[in-house]
Image (cartoon, rainbow, N blue to C red; front, side):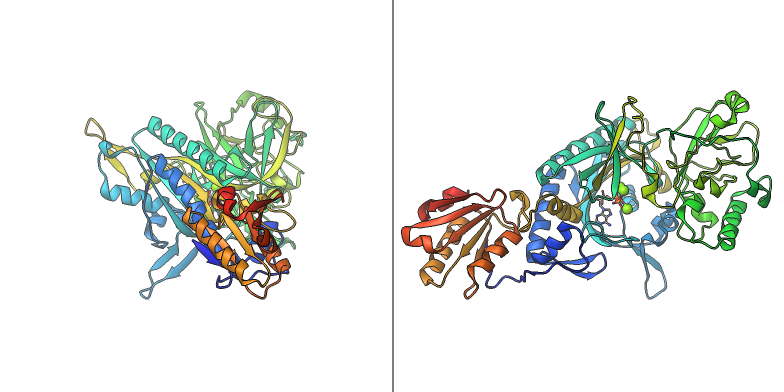
Amino acid sequence: MVLRMSALFLRTLREDPADAELPSHRLLVRAGYIRRVSPGIYTWLPLGLKVLRNVERIVREEMDAIGAQELLFPALLPKEPFEATGRWEEYGDNIFRLKDRKDADYLLGPTHEEMFTLTVKDLYSSYKDLPLALYQIQTKYRDEARPRAGLLRGREFVMKDSYSFDIDEAGLDKAYQLHREAYVRIFNRLGFHYVIVEAMAGAMGGSKSEEFLATAEHGEDTYVRCSSCGYAANVEAVRVPVPDPVPFDGAPAAHVEDTPDTPTIETLVDHLNERHAREDRPWTAADTLKNVIVTLAYPDGHREPLAIGVPGDREIDEKRLEAQVAPAEVEAFDEKAFAENPALVKGYIGPGALGEQGTAKIRYLLDPRVVEGTRWVTGANEPGRHVIDLVVGRDFTADGTIEAAEVRAGDECPSCGHVLETARGIEMGHIFQLGKKYAEALDLKVLDQNGKLVTVTMGSYGVGVSRAVAAVAEGNHDDLGLVWPREISPADVHLVATGKDDEVFAKGADIARALEAEGLEVIFDDRKGVSPGVKFKDSELIGVPTIVVVGRGLAEGKVEVKDRRSGERTEVAVDDVVAAVT
Ligand code: ATP
Ligand code: MG
Ligand code: MG
Ligand code: MG
């Protein structure tokens, strides 16, 4: 196909957009790939849409290659399935909610575990139907607190999400591994540098989970890596000792008198909200203990891991707190050692009855001041039942921001003890062993070989397709503009005709047609009355990998072929130009 610049719906800009800080954002807007509609919401202009489609094609090819089948769900979804899994509440302000004319609740899908689970339940009933992997490339909606950097963090964005369905753990492991390999191929083809890091299960619950982070100094994710053993993990997922623990003297913290001896989740909520009202300062995430990781240890030796994440930007309530309880990591608890030296145990809480996994009810008391580093968590000490191992700076933060929870460079690698380094990246993909969480909540069961009903085990796997457009741009540009890898470039060749000579333009059109006949995509700058300087600048800004200039040299039967990335120019005979660029 030939895109003629004289007609192409494109206006390049000389000035950087005022709201754009990152190069990818600046350049994608300036080069006419995207236009902002509203924060985190963008229009794909013709060139941008071509790049997006190219990323989609790569993702689609690799998903098809592992036998995943494509389908397409609506973005507009009813509330009920999300209520059944608890996510209608859990998402809080992060989803777009709307009502229909009959006052029924709907949402714009932020991710589709519920819908896939229900559809498989609808159509499949036997182990013979499994394994199964389904995917879609679809527009997602999340009301992100800080939409940022153009396409990198949109409120409307394109995601490839896939889901695997298996009868047992071995099947899930295999599906996970297949996806992992497909992701390696996808990100290699997209042409950016990335790392695979361990990721925390977070609010989704489940077991194994890894992220693909594009390495980028402006990335929002911080990860640690060990140059000795290769261990790498998102800081949200790592557990390293705090270097200098504050000694616990056994005495209750001063505020304990504020709260009853046997606190319940309700009294915790009241306590935190009262404090909030009393103190003349902003309510931070630290006050409500963001991402506290706790372990419940029982007298019989069995342990329940829990992770509690409570967003701190608003008043918490009981439901939210409970909804956020999810499985985490198990730590040993030594009752005797604790009796001898309470400082060993970094915090303890007397839990109440545990409900089903993922919706545990706990009764506890936390001292929000621990986040200021003055004292470890203290609490009601129900004999034999303790929550242990709360660590300042790792499990929650001093100033309420995620950044402050970072593992510091210099901490020990949990795998080999070597010194860790930290670095930043952009989350491009996320693979996740969900296990039975969604299948249980939505009752997805099939008959096994013995005619017995068993719950299906699932995985979920996401790629940020629109985010990838920005991430590739972020990793492929120079002072002059974008420099696309060929596979996702909006065109293979940017052909520039210069001067006023009609013959030049006619020859340019011939070359464009010849390239097109070879199956190449061509941008042909056939604009009349536009100076060569402007045309060259535009070609550099737009960033197609090969630029061909037809101009004065034509008199001697020559055109110039320029490599956008290296800047290298070569003179080529007109008749050889097709061979030179294919
Ligand atoms: P993040 O940590 O960046 O908020 P996430 O962990 O919330 O991402 P997932 O739910 O794992 O995202 O979604 C799968 C993929 O979708 C992510 O790996 C990312 O590439 C992409 N993605 C998530 N949120 C956005 C967004 N707001 N804009 C663009 N892409 C996104
Ligand atoms: Mg997110
Ligand atoms: Mg993430
Ligand atoms: Mg993720």
